[in-house]
Length: 359
Image 1 (tube, rainbow, N blue to C red):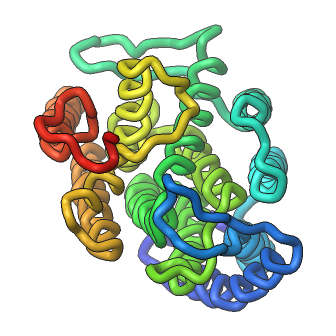
Image 2: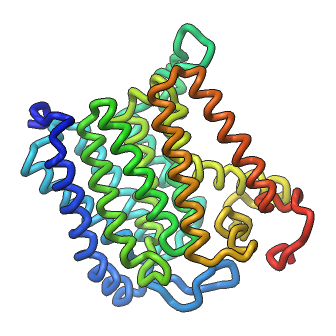
């Protein structure tokens, strides 16, 4: 039973990470063949960076690795005895299926959003919803009451789409998610949440194995089946197994997801300013702006990785700090990134010089 595993015994953790890593290395070539055979492919256009047709079936490998690793973990250590795990995996399967359908048939954005919302509602009702939040400078916590489910649904759908939106360069979304999942591993280990610890390690192992094929120049893309799955998974873990953080301070998961969240919020603001549909794509995301400054594809991805590590350190600190100090830490990061984003032109109206992307 999971209760007998001590946090100082790292052999189970190392074992499950290695298993997931090698399973990912083994299943990704299979996913590539499936993508090519069934025409689950990405065709380049003027907004995209890649030049040739690419299979976007990498999510199949990530999901298969996650599922097989979970079965092995269940068999070896029997860690997940709570029935809500069944509901959790139903949600994971549904969000993966939605993404796979989109990879194949290019579903309308509104349809995807509606289905994501229904899956998030299912999760909030059957698994966990954030009911209490401790806010800075208030003695009593904020009880969400009837707003618990809407708040949870908004968080899950938002984070899910945030990871989907940053999937614009080889290895970007998978690497960012890998760093985020490792961050959750450390935080959940510190808080004594073994379920979240194991689940985070499975995902990180799957993603780092997948990165071998997804790093520039990529042989396969995550696709929506991958980006929606990992986005939903990370959001679900943050409000469920790490509910101590959600109760003590929601600042910690915000810092872990800072890059995807900020990039998504900036995109929404940009499109509102320009009076464009929210779902309309553009070339002013963080990775686009770094590329426009002359950084190479690989360098751009590594710069964003370093940003994620920088914010992960803040997430670690926020677990140890009081809520009020965590708030000051978040404000520091917000000001820092706002200045950086304005400098590189993530808001078209604030840039001093026009670039080719503006025209």
